[in-house]
Image 1 (tube, rainbow, N blue to C red):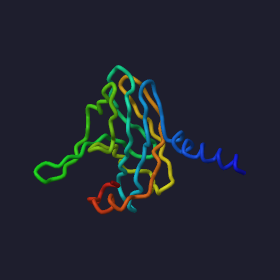
Image 2: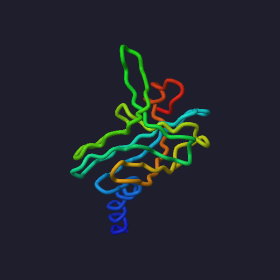
Image 3: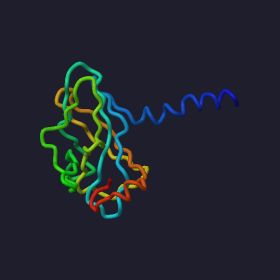
Image 4: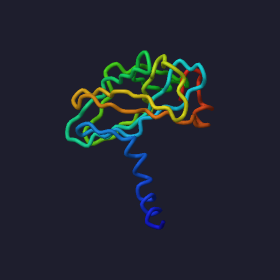
Length: 158
């Protein structure tokens, strides 16, 4: 019994992490996630981090998913007290030796999802990088946080 408990404790933290990390070349993609959206939300916000462990810059140029009509990269900002969101049309730079977050003012916008996704669901997608190529990932749908729900401005999941 003690051996089984020790084994479970050692493996426990590794199991979820292994299922939620993806690698292509020198790029390490961690924790793709979407917060559960309110009913009838026409969009879902997707978040993740990308660590570039190589010596060459790269760029995330697209995200594709059969679960939505279209996926766009967006940048949020506040100018003169007014929140704005703009599509990133030239991709998201992932400089060598850095980690870039979709969630630090940037996010993936899943437009017109094919159904309502709830916590525990998974959404398959493909990240398309300029140099590293394509990597299939899974965005895990997580329970919406109270902070996100309070700051929601109606048409976004986060």
